[in-house]
Length: 591
Image 1 (tube, rainbow, N blue to C red):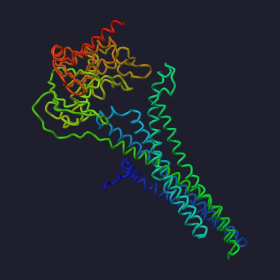
Image 2: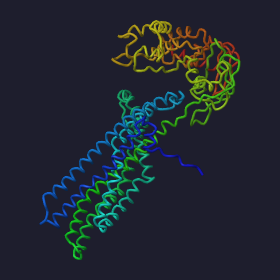
Image 3: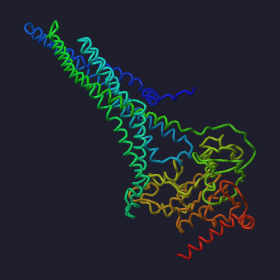
């Protein structure tokens, strides 16, 4: 028999993220419980005072009234102080938990393989951290202090009603029992599924909404409507459907729940009328009935609060499950492996399939990339070229086969040590919204002289020259932006600073205009010196000087050799080259 996965509750969240403030959890519970018990006591004192007035009016003294008034006042003061204490402790706990969720989430993300981020939407990851951290804060600060009070107060009031008159207490129990039965419908598994569907559709709406907003310029230029963005439009329709499903499901049980709470109040009047004729003390019965009618509204409010808190707890349970999802992403372990006396990068029988894809992206690939040599990977789109580069840098782990760098399996190298051996320039070079200096150094310690040298080598000095604050200019602020080709040159400056022995280039000139492409190619020639260079290229004129060209088709290596050798012996490469030449001729003839 399989064990059910243990659900993460608020106690587990506090233990994990409380950061030394776990005691506030128990103080909040205790203060909240005390508040829940004491909140009903003023009604007891009012009942006692009403009895004094109705039953013993002639002998009533001012001292008796003052006594009950003082008891009510003191009780209310304690209730207020208990509530304040519960809220202070819960807020202190909430801020610490929220901070630690964000901190631990970022630390966890930094330990995940880079491939994880290539397959995840950035908007979803942001929501996963921001929304769930803030939701947990909201629950701890604003819902959690009411949980114990919402549970204890109705029980205390019910016990008081039974103590005063068991007949009214029995009527009350029947009403509460019916209400709880209908409440269970709102808290059952089906309701949780509706809630989970609703929250998932809300998350999808947020993620796709960001994508739509980014595409608004295209929408306006082509005079389109939201319906033309089918993915976003379907997300809106799905959200609307899930919201209606959830509301319609809760509508009838909520109505029955409310009626079950109010019905006993009406029946109390009928019961009192029926009992008063045969009562030994009709005035006492009247006082008891008056007490029940007076407290029935309070009981209704307390039970409604309990229902609200329970519903909120069910909603936030989805948040706790999201936290489990956030921290369940597996880190890449550092394994032991046989070390061999060899140099360069060796791939043996490497096969890899992307998660959720039916066909492998790389199949049984074997090759030895020697040091200080240049290699080019060519082939049609989807042939596995870029995937190979990512496997070498261990963005992903292989399904089978092995990859070794200088005789050491990549799985046996810590991530920092592994990545220190690579300088990587991909098709899209992402620049952070921070200073030019930080974009180039990426957190490393380099002098201004070293940075200027890297900019000279990458032909990016002209970019620096137009920056109003030099290296301290913030990229992306006050109109300071760079083009795709300029971003690539800044990425090359990063690579020059790293001085790594292996250079990985994934179509480094893909988004460059002719002027930038010329500068990038000149910089690449300098960058390749003394390095093992492995580059992916679609522009075949850039690979002819490579020591070896590897031809890939459907994830497999089908040929390798120099440009001249492949033009003689590989028909597939000949076709690729001829198609590229025709595209160049077509472009020139149309300019």
